[in-house]
Length: 143
Image 1 (cartoon, rainbow, N blue to C red):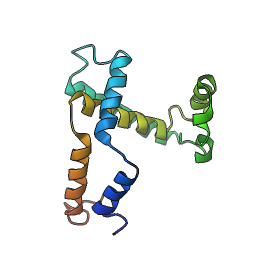
Image 2: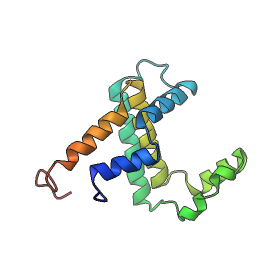
Image 3: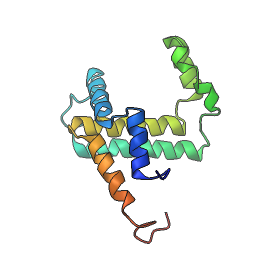
Image 4: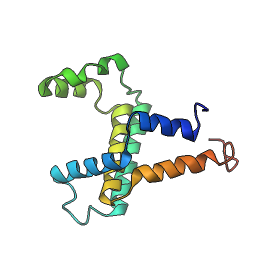
């Protein structure tokens, strides 16, 4: 199995039991539980997509300011902190970093998929397989 192949990636996803559809539904339900998705005007696809774009813009801004989590080892113990310690640690070490903003974008993508009742896992799997069948740098693109 080729390390970057679709089959390899699918094997890895199965190994870690990742399911994006379940994740999307959980994110959506959490958002509803926190008071989101109650305003019909803000709960349309266009608004949700632009909120994803805004998180990516914040990610770019964090990169422009060289705001990255300094040391991945500092993230190792976060699960063992109480809520007060975690909140203080997160705000001092992770908040507004590239990693934080990229996580926000992923959460917004999952929330959108959950709101639209989309089988995100199947669509990611299909797109990954399709991309495997495309030529190297398809479309004569530089990046």
